[in-house]
Image (cartoon, rainbow, N blue to C red; front, side, top):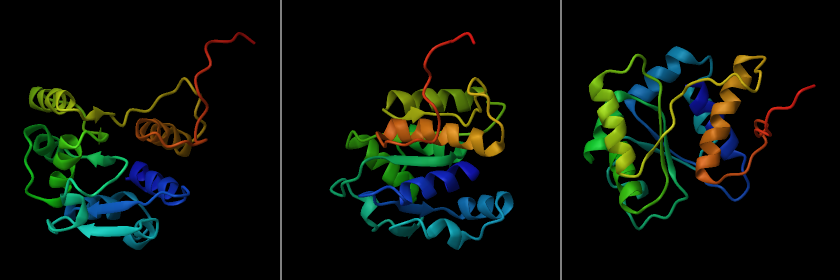
Length: 177
């Protein structure tokens, strides 16, 4: 959940950007387990917050314009729903609509290890147009803290959405000192 929290914080502070959050029951549980912050700390970054069972909310419609969608973290249940076009919740319906409208959908799975079904669902979601961006830390940028690792992954997500940022340095090739 640190990835989602940082992503919400950055997007919420981005000028001319609206952040709409869909909070599933599982997301609330994961937030409580992994973060010392209350739910309200996450929702303060948002323009709007929707319940996952509100299938009449704006993100359920293709006529609702947005820049893209991120499911972070993306459970294997949500991955399976997205890969199969299932839309029984607002989160899954919004993802399905995002794909059908040709907008960016970034899925950030963090399950490990992965079984054959997980890998098949990732392939299916990718073939449908989703970007699979696993929450895998990188170390070539020499992180000095967990925050550096989180920032690097969030920077990759922002790149996929076309949102400019200064969270991490861009790769500039190998340079010998």
